[in-house]
Structures are given as structure tokens and as C-alpha cells.
Image (cartoon, rainbow, N blue to C red; front, side, top):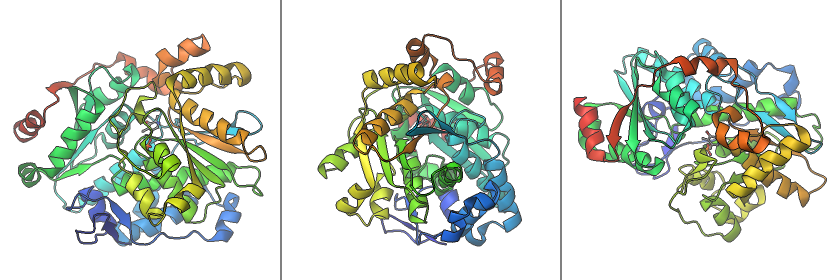
Length: 432
Ligand SMILES: *Cc1c(COP(=O)(O)O)cnc(C)c1O
């Protein structure tokens, strides 16, 4: 399998090079030359396969011969080494809980797969790689945890000071070793702009082998397909494909689901659920796409004004608005509705949503009210304990911190303060 740049001004590369580079030299996103299909018989009989077997079937064509089979099996097994339960909330709506990994968010899957691939490639004399990543909250923790102790890889995480939750901040600032956290006095968009400038900078690219761990990296984006397959294994009514609602920010997660669907996974319809940062729902409604300036919300991991993976979705559908609209509907959900949804779902069904899952839940509920014979699930992308202020106020009780996160509160935060200035970032990266 080779990958081409969506800007079409760079040579095609293997999975190995696409992973190491992150972005193509022409600043385009890498995209697979062909979309592999999964044998329909395998999908029909998916419950005869273990999760590891399915994961190998899905990932192997994308990786090609850049990772030997035995190593790939180890990498996928470690990547998916926790539960992905599909939990019924009511007759029509279930929740695919993607928060049972080490940092309590779905980003663990992509970060674990990517870190292990980079670790594998760096053993083969690639030289030291520096992963540079901006986070609005969850990426930082997942990347820090996934890359901790991986030889040959240095990780630098930029996060907006005061704009991530306490658990999120602890997850990304307490690792030490090869993980450095830069606390930027600015917004997530400022952090993202600094990272983008760094990838464009000639001096930095001469001095360091820089790569990104955002979902623009194919090694983070592609493995997110896996849990859509695991969900289908658990989907009871195989006669009727599910509607899937994905809380979306940079659109990497939903784009992976679309890829899985094009490979053969049965999905009735996709719902792109956004907070008021809704450039894509706006496009789906009007046919006009315009990036926006991000506005802060209570579902902060989705506060993205210009979603990086939108261009990959366009490519998947041959850039045809009508085709995209048939498969995806967009919804915009305000903070007020998000809060109300958390309260309602808790009081009606005893299920605790996090703000991101609540955005998806409301969107799915809206959609299903117009399609009463259909059923579906949301992707519950983070554990509610990551957003305690919002959630506890709505459900009227404390959320228990899962055992896997309790140790964090005894650790010391270590961050490096920085102004929202690319010049300062460059100076620090070059001279420490
Ligand atoms: C990152 C994140 C999202 C958005 O995912 P994208 O792939 O960027 O669309 C949604 N929810 C949570 C909790 C996240 O951390």
C-alpha cells in the first residue's frame, strides 16, 4: 500500500514513511492509494473471529510489508488491550464506550498504535524522531502515555494553560522521561498554529526529524477503524445496520468510521455531532464550507474551527456533496442542550454521559425521532470523570475516579510555561 499527498505535489510513500513524516513535504495529508475491502463473509461471521484477528485483517493491508506479521500482531494486540463495550442506554440508543484505556479516552487507540509503529521503525536506524503535538485536552494524555519510554522518540506536547481539566493536565504533565509538556498562555488554536509553523520551518526541519501525533498521522488515524468493527461484533440486530453518531472535532474519528464502512462494514448512516464549532454540519446543511474561529465550549476536545480531516472525507466521497450528504448528517448542539442531555439521560436511564458523548447522544436522538424504525449507537469518547465540573453539576452527585486514574492525583505536575509565540517555541526546540 502506498499513500499519496492530498496536495498532489509530493511523491507517494509507504506506510513507514507516512508514519515518520506525519505530513507530506507539500503539507498535504497522506491518503491510501486504494481502500482495501474486508471479505463480506468475514463481516457476516465476525463473531467467529477474535478482536486481534479482525484487527490484523483490517490493518495489514494498510501497513503492507513495512512491519513483519509477528510484530504487527504484537502491536495491534497491545493497542486494543482493553474493553470496548457496547452498552445499551435504551431501546434505540447504545453507547460504545471507548474510555476503558489508560487515559480514559478513545485517543488511546490511535496513540498506542502510532507510538508502537514509530518505536518499531526507529529500531531500524531511522534516527531520533521528535513528535510535536498540540492538544485541547485528550490528545496530550493519550500521546504521553502511549509514547512514554519509547526509545528513539522525544515527545513535545503543547497545551493551552487553564483550558484543560485537572485529570487531563495531570495525564500530560506527570510522565517525565521522554515526554515534555509546554503550557502555552493562549488557546488551543494558538498551540495548533505554533505546531503548524514548526512543521513549515526550514531550520527546525534541518535540525530535527519532526512528526505529528495528531490525527493527520495515518498511524493514528487508521487504527480508529478497529472499534467500529468491534462494535459491529456486539451489535445484536444484524438485519438492520446501526446509525452511528460520532462527536467530532478534527473529524479523524468519524473519517476512520467512514473508511471502515467503505471497506464493507454495514452502517446505515453517520452523524457528525458537533458543538457550536460546526463548520462541517454547516457544510452538510448548505454545501458551502468555511473554516471558523474556534469558540470555547464544555465539550472542549471538539473546539476546532478548521477540522484537519475534512479534506480526507471529501476525498473518500470523490469530492461530491450529494454523495456525502446521503451518508452523513450534521448536527450542532449548544452547551445548554449538552448539559440538559447529561441530566436527562442520567435521570431517565441512570447512564452518565460525558459532554462529548452527550453532544452525540442529542444528535442521534434528534435523527432517530425522524427515523423511528432505526437504531444506533454513539461513540462515548471520554470518561465523564475527565469533565467533573460539568457532569457532577448535572447529575447532582460525585463521579468516582476509576482506579486506573487515581494514582495521578499523587503525582507532581511538571510543565514549561511559554508564550503563544512560534519564535519562543523554535528557540526552545533548538536550544532547550
Ligand atoms: C479528540 C476528541 C474528540 C474529537 O475527535 P476527532 O477525531 O478530532 O473528531 C471527541 N471527543 C473527545 C473526548 C476527544 O478527546
